Length: 114
Length: 113
Image 1 (cartoon, chains in turn purple, blue):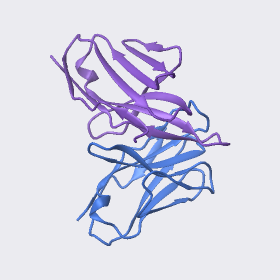
Image 2: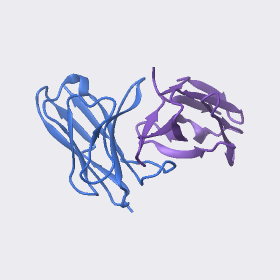
Image 3: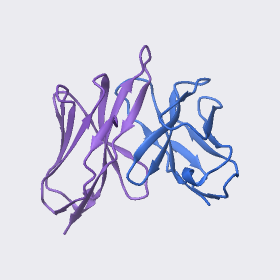
Image 4: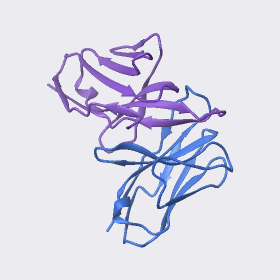
């Protein structure tokens, strides 16, 4: 079973739409949670961290449900520039260490059309 | 500020050839990682290094070796390349600590023919 499961999409939405991505993780010892964005043929870059209380950054809202081991990302008022692949990322700390291994979902592809 | 620098950006190898992918970071990060990304598979961890002088296997280490030369540099070596190693390789680094962001290099596109 993969550490992180994501719906690969693709999601095709018009400008201005609201779109939500979901992700589940299998390791209950997971410590930290992130959403990364990856543009075509580029490296992944941090979009936002995900906190237990939920957090918002402009048009982006991330939620974490530890009991269900579920992470979500909501994008409101989609822009053309939001077209990218969104990666759900979970960090699991090695026992007795401060090093965490990052596990990536396969990514959800989003295309926003005019 | 360069961040994480990978070389080369592109490489074509023949089956059985060897090569080393280079990675360097200038952010004074302790931890460094090598990932491969294949279509439909997401990023998979090959090897990682918690600190200078230590390395550990990730999810898919077979066919690879690594060296943490110093705090800045972490190289990935393919001793005898195989077509199954055709992929995009990313190096990343982080400070230690649970909530820290990973910074990635621009990737190396490797084709083994």
